[in-house]
Length: 233
Image 1 (spheres, one colour):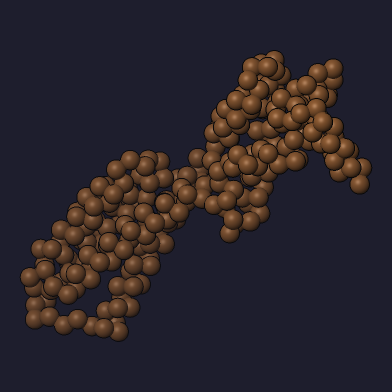
Image 2: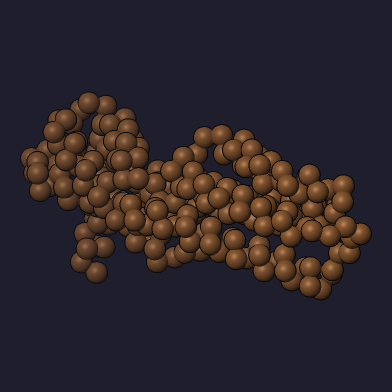
């Protein structure tokens, strides 16, 4: 929970400092001259509204995902009130303030989308998909309590692997953010299924394994030979 609170604060501070640096740098290297004076109050009030708005928006994105574009537009409109009022007298500098505010809200949206797309899905979702997958394969031919225990075991194993790879390979986080059902068809997963049934239901492990792995008796014999070769090499 602490991370969820600190993250939007840190992001907001980085955005505020970055946009302030951009504003001063642009004005320093490309000064915009106008006939009227007294634009400082417009910058001051716009800055205050932007700071409050960007903090509020980043906190909203951290905890909610509905109507984010509408809220971003409303906050941008609120931030643009003073630049729009001064637009007739200082059009270029007013436009610059609006563009910088727009950049701030867009950067929040882009970061939120990237974070959502690459975030590791909850373990409950892994469990739900694995349960659906294996229950469809079992066709109610395997005892429910046995399937429940097996599904929990596979969920724990798969989620631990995904979490480890998600942390270990930052560039591949998109790959490891969601469960891919083909991973459940990996030989290692098959071996763990067979081992589970052999440990829990030795008399029926062959029958139950053939059901879930969709193998004929001859195919299962070949499978066990390969499994034995792998385990003893």
